[in-house]
Image (cartoon, rainbow, N blue to C red; front, side, top):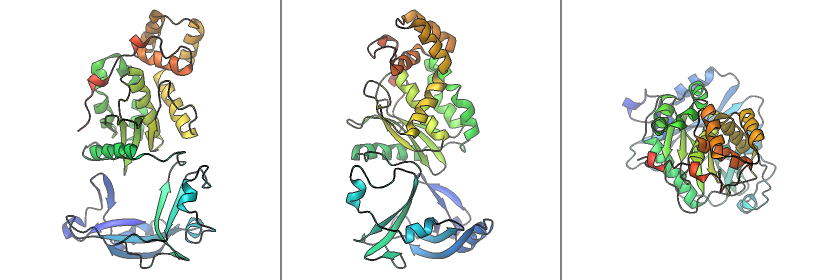
Length: 351
């Protein structure tokens, strides 16, 4: 557990803040003990201060470090005295021996990074424990590329410069089912960023980088949710499915960097988390029983007039219906492309 605090007296009373997109608690030991006192299941094992080795333009800053044990939990024991350590080569091998499950992971180092204080750090033979991190979802089959990481960093930087009210999960849950009706009008579509901002969600448009195949992402800046779209495909069906897919991640408080969501190059084998996001996005766009009934009535010939009539009844853009029919395999990706209107002209890359 780490809590950052500043030595500047004027800032000590500001206990929670966001600095360049990162969330901090400005605590001293007394405030930390006071906060933990209301949680009897938590035991403070150790607390100490370290100076920030990056102290330059940031001013005088220190870190308050604490080890807190939750009574009845064996997580700390497992991390501090593991049965074995896995090497970097083993972790990155395919298939990886590491369990594909969310959890808490510890990194032990043999070669210590320079300028990192290690006094008091837990040791296991020649290895030193320097970092503990939380993985809220199962690890990816493949690591992100440098270009994909660069795209995500750009998203974080842009989102960090934006402002929005406090996130309301209830507000987003109410809004999300109404959003597809905005697809009928360019003017209504243009209002989506503002509508999401009202419930505390920041929508960021960052252009697609060649070779990344990124469609969108759901990220968190502390407790601030961010939805990012690349507009890789200039199609109304792509825009709406990707938007709703990322909002599904946000409602589950998940983070995701999604590639190949839509089109004939879409991934066919995805995790349960992605399957759930796909399912919810589809349900929000077109009620499944209505779409199934429409398909049963018209299969195998789906005329333009039939698609447009069904879209009118559903109060959505006909391109969304085309996209869903293509995704289901009811029509080829080459059919009714003239209904897949573009959306890029409605949005400029977020600055």
